Length: 249
Image (tube, rainbow, N blue to C red):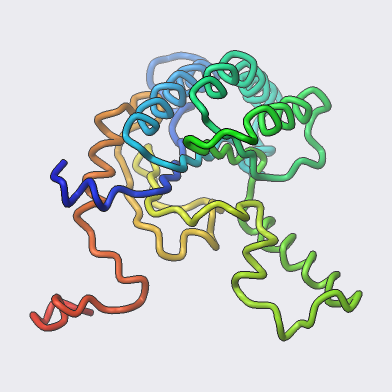
């Protein structure tokens, strides 16, 4: 990348990791084999993002809609999460990575919740990259929960409804304290957000990659970032130099 492109590196990259099941089916393998391979990709991509200097990396690992999948597959996904935390937490901590978990905690299996709490507590003082795991996460539910908390505060007189602004609302979201994503990548060729960071993605750049998640690697990540660096982010405003040349919209 050029020096100019490096200066525009995204601070926060979020990834919708899609295509594990299809990767396995195309190879005549059980879907769970795709999830196992997907975990290896998580390790590889997390290290690559850290080496590239990405400050925040958010991975969409399990959505609230995923509960409709077969119970056996859900059980395997939970097992993989437990294995990932037990196997990789020490390395993440050693590398000064802070782990944040976003998503609904209520209703999770009793052997999952303590692991999530442990991962956050152990790494809470780390100052390097922040790895955000979106687990049992759904953006619409997150937004409704934030609105509900503010409504309860207003009903108790703890806050004036007229004082509610975007900053106050964002403080009630799971992602409070985390900057909005600059770049959202989705693998597998699908082109939608699927209830992922809907509020936070307001001005994110989107890159859709025709590669299934288990096949995604450092070169695909670098290419997505390269695409990001060539874009002009106006955040609803205009670029004066482009406007003078008749290029603004």
